[in-house]
Length: 193
Image (cartoon, rainbow, N blue to C red):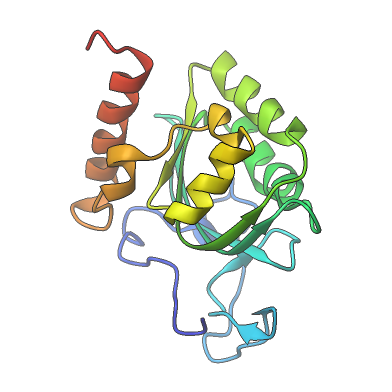
């Protein structure tokens, strides 16, 4: 896992360490010191902590004018033992929502497992973004993780699966990724399109 870095090719568009609205503003990171681990496996020092011992993030893009944020995740999403959704919501999402972000793209190809507890933080997040005409889309999560979301009715709070799981999001910059996601989101929210 130590070889898996957060996506860095969009640094020219956005850098969370240089964004004064980011919880990770002015975070300094030693590129060569691997001290953070998930279940005994070191992860790359570029991943940001939200307080969970099993789920780490990297905000790879945020546009406050357009109200959209893209967050890459790594680890195990474990609500059952660690209440990871609480950490994600309180330590990152709340500040992004307060800054005007209402459309979230979560990239989950490095999320290895999901363990459910309760829905309250998902419901709160969903209601907040809906009041702002927003949404939460999941990209490239593993099939078994999506299945766990569906089996626990968490999928009702997210737009997920289908073509959203096949987006080549790394190519073409963040605007192209956002455009592709928004097209799919609009088709799902308004089937007449």
